[in-house]
Length: 220
Image 1 (cartoon, rainbow, N blue to C red):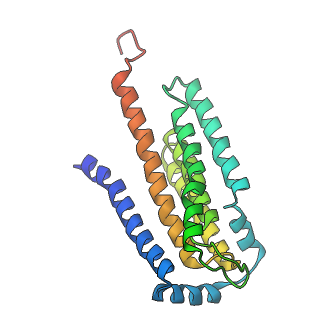
Image 2: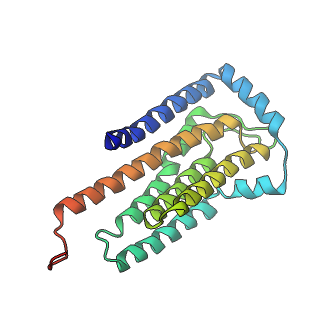
Image 3: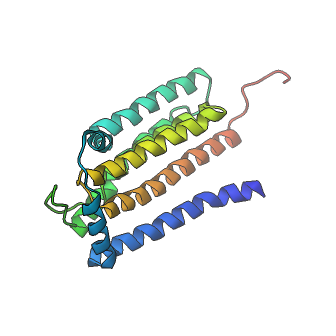
């Protein structure tokens, strides 16, 4: 029963994320009522400062991508030293999933062509590239490390990842770089890509366990 519930959670996460993303994207595309509310809320929350700028910068490609690459290399080395089979797969998938973000975000920006804020005039602001990059890069880095952490450390790791990603989204809005819905849409995309990452790594692990004999030759 517990296994069935755990198996349904990723499906539920993806379903909710896709529904929210579809609604938000539709509203942005048609300049709907939700966009008006979003822009009023966004203008109200602009309070520029160094802390908001610091968190906003954590979503930059030149910050987030090196982090996930470094974690992938370190975890791969650690797993290989401990005799893990296909030790390179989780890291490769994590880096590949992070690299997929621009391929998803950039066409949407071009298609929807959403105007920016007074601070950042121009178009192409939905969805937020910084938010999506941070969500996938730091999320994948966390999922890479998580299997090697035990006890309360797992909750600390997830908590730090959540705070960083929340900080990136809030920082972008506070600095006036993005509207709130730009951030929400990217969080939804991040949830889908992270669930896909977890599914791919889990499937690879199951194939390895089923198809590779144990290295042990003596009695256990």
